[in-house]
Image (tube, rainbow, N blue to C red):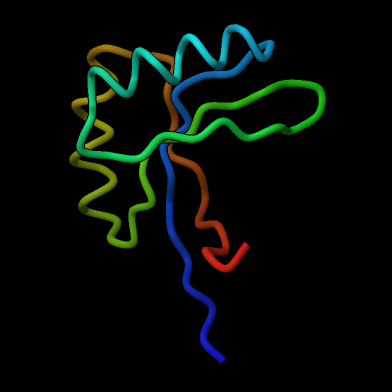
Length: 81
């Protein structure tokens, strides 16, 4: 069985209320990508997209950093979770 890997962009993190507000803003700024709130104790993290191609994530990251300079590209995650 092949495991599908993807790379999200982490927009930011904080309390649940901070993450919820950030997720709403990111949804308006980048509606073409899905955004999620992930709980990673002790904070909530906002992830954008599920990129399978490194060039796609880097291209999008360049645009995202203009609005959210704290964002980072995360290492590939297992898409089957």
